[in-house]
Length: 460
Ligand code: ADP
Image (cartoon, rainbow, N blue to C red):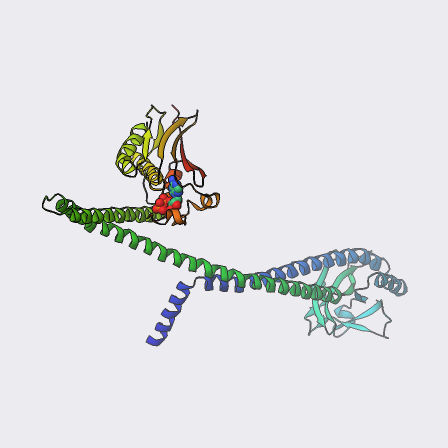
């Protein structure tokens, strides 16, 4: 019992982990069953309507033939000719007879009715049994109704056939004097149906086979889909881990920077020690930037980066960033300027806009060995553009195409000593896109680069 339920549980887990099995099984069973059911249903419908047609045809035949038989009941020769003619025109007719009814008074035992005319040559004194035990067929069931026929479906070695009987009334007395009996073979129609059904099954089989082949491929696609889902889960776990690790790294880094600053303030330190502390602080800043980038990438990938939009004149923000970079620019011997003017309002998250400016202006200073960095603004009716121009190393057309890819850095002698992650421009582009802005690059290798970042103006 325990073993059985363990196997059942394992089976359930397996199906749970591989849902494509249910899908495949369902289709493998459902499709053939659907085809089989449809084929059978159509065959039954077709046979029913064929039988109905036959029924109507025989009823009409009996209506006409019944009148003819009633009028000529005493003329067996004429009756025979009439039956022969009808049989000639109806190839499915296998028997056509006229029987005379015997009354109880005319014989001791009424078990047979004599045949007075037949479409095929008559045996002398041929009679028809009035109650056929094998087929449970009785002429009495034809009753006294000369307007309706009595039908029975019977089976012979040659196939299905219909026996139908119509009571014949004497024209003068309205008494039943005999019966008209016809037998129509249904085997032709049945054979045709059987062969059509066979064809339908062959076609269905081919279609099912084709569907099964496609399903095999489909199952593989579902396999890939569940694999993809699992990979996504792993990827999310990785992002969560990276976010958590990056976050945790920041606290000790802040402590390191705090103590470095404290020690640096001491007047008893040698100039060499101050230099070393400067190196420690620069490395810590670099590490902090890297952690910030990693956190931003993780947040962007998870769609967790939030934006607090406000309508702002960004000139103050640009000026603040430029001011913050004056010292590093001066240290490198670069001129950095921005001519502040009032700007039309744009709808951005000011913190994120600040981050974008820091990245562009920071890069411009970082990748410009000598010369200048200019920040200018311009506005059209719809758009405000901020242009960050430098006279730096420039970017080749090939590199420009890959610039915004994650981790992409231009490789070459001129960039060899410059540290970075290759994440800044990817993050910047994602942020700008999220704020409905665009970025364009204009650059000539060896001459300098312009980054133009544009945002739609707020319409009042
Ligand atoms: P990082 O600066 O950390 O390498 P970014 O994504 O900010 O990463 O920049 C990607 C690359 O684009 C840089 O490595 C650099 O080669 C190139 N780049 C960015 N800004 C400039 C610029 N103003 N002039 C020349 N090259 C630049």
